[in-house]
Image (spheres, rainbow, N blue to C red):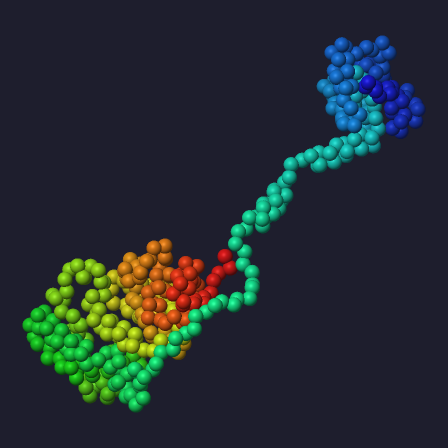
Length: 408
């Protein structure tokens, strides 16, 4: 059964609120159409049926009654007639309404607000916290520090008797990379190309080629802003000026050749972009590979400074020499070059590696530069060359990589 609230008259409600002291002579209640004051008021059948349906609700649910249109209209009417009636509010259903104090109304509203807060959907902050919890559960690979005890292969030391440098002169060190056969080839190719282009013989001898390379090495050690300053009266270097005149040096500098252009086929020119200096690079590479292989090596990239016309000239702003030709180098701990590879393209490097499937540029470079290293060698590199596939490929060859990695 639905329990109807106790009915109060307007005068009694005002007395309870303390708005009047029992004297209501100034209030005109004759025009009040409130059904509470009508003793013969009977609820309509429609209102009675709705109240019976609401009576079926269990007492545990404790529903909060909502104001009806009739009660809201009555509230507006009373507030317009007398400002002292604003402290009351109709809280009854269609059957009747009661005048409750303001404190009781505020209590009901506060209870309703607490229920609404309990049932409201989670806000953005709660959703974000939930997502954080989910990400922690499905984070995937997580790194942690553990003691590493790998089963490393023993390094095979190489006998140094095949390259004894005891008693070497500077020219012996130079001829380890650039020998007399290469100088002879440079002299012949330069004379042929100069005669075919200009018709005037260059008459370059092998000794003059040696002196030319020596002058270039000396200029790289003692640098002037311009080459012409080496023949100036105040700054001239006699080791250079006594061997060449300024005009002869610039003529040799513009006519020196390593190959005869007409002898190089077109298909080779398409495959090798450095075909004009390839014999010179191969001879230097041969000298690098003749060195003894240490148990530790380092792989990195360097820039060969060059600002002339070259289709593979690159710009790397973070390098000390930002403009030049990129070169991948394998060197010892003291900086001696063991192997190198000029960068043309990724495809050109892939052709020099066995089974390059699934390897990126960095792994292909590691595979190419480690071809001459012995088993058990430890290779050190930066994060550009440190990849999982590259390390696994080196482990299969019993070569061990140590490199830096990012947190992610």
